[in-house]
Image: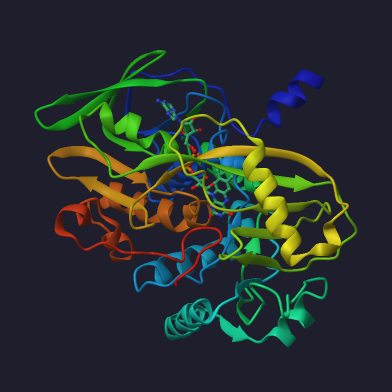
Length: 406
Ligand SMILES: Cc1cc2nc3c(=O)[nH]c(=O)nc-3n(C[C@H](O)[C@H](O)[C@H](O)COP(=O)(O)OP(=O)(O)OC[C@H]3O[C@@H](n4cnc5c(N)ncnc54)[C@H](O)[C@@H]3O)c2cc1C
């Protein structure tokens, strides 16, 4: 009886791996399962999502899950704004509590140049319908009472870009919600199934070699983030991506004292407090390339030092744990989405760097549309791989977690 109940309540079914699917998605992170979910909405159900580990165990398990739309470019703002809108309705759409807390965010400006950049961002954001405005030091203090304005010291807070709809979401709930929705729509989810090769016939992909045998497919989507280059190498494609670890940490739980997400590009740190009271602290990616997901002391020391510059009141707070994940960094801080010239049936969703969690609904929906119709939606056209040949780069300098335009 207990076993029966457990089986009935599983979030997704365990099914045998078939030898053919219409669509194979490599990678069961947030982008893989989101695309699978939106494909089912468009009537495509013969899909397998293959992951070499457990579902959502890559960067999607390690993300700090900040969702925002205050980007800087004419390409990035509409795309991330659409994704934020989809997040606002996602819990209802998936019938799953995602604990999406739209607490608002402040990007601090400590120099005249930084304030100039933030002002530009506020202007572009408002022009394109994103709620974002400049606030002075007094309003910063009103919004975040424990912050040290650093008056008379290096890097005083001269102003901030305030983005009220920015939120934080429960990351694994997003993956599980999409995965359950995809499963209910007929998608097969196959964790612990590694793709080891991709077969091609006459200039198009014909299937994937896996640790469980060969699987034929009309379309193969690579949604493998930090591992994207290894998948691309299977079709002799070199992507303009480098993989870097990003290290973050949380403190012991504290009484609620911080009700906004705070980011400082000059201090290379971003900070917010979770509903559990832990303070999440992150910054930029490690400067070296690696596939290692180990944590190290130096980034944590630096994050702690930089956080104390903003919040000296946290001097006695203990770090509870630290972790790292892989980021597939593109040279223009923008994603790569779409087909690959000369290789029919192969689709990319990568270049998600340290900013891709927030993009999953808009990217998944757009790529599902591309796969089902063969037409690339206008929203993602600027993010084609071909931009690295035409030179029309996006230069999305507001993408990184502690982003800056100087
Ligand atoms: C520490 C950290 C903090 C971050 N903070 C934010 C943030 O605040 N906001 C934000 O928007 N983004 C953030 N990001 C970025 C965001 O988490 C990622 O961009 C996003 O999760 C990528 O999702 P994905 O599905 O593309 O990749 P992943 O979640 O990495 O999934 C890829 C999957 O592919 C699988 N795979 C790889 N190779 C193979 C193979 N050969 N065969 C089968 N499966 C394979 C992996 O096992 C993995 O599960 C952060 C990232 C990190 C690491």
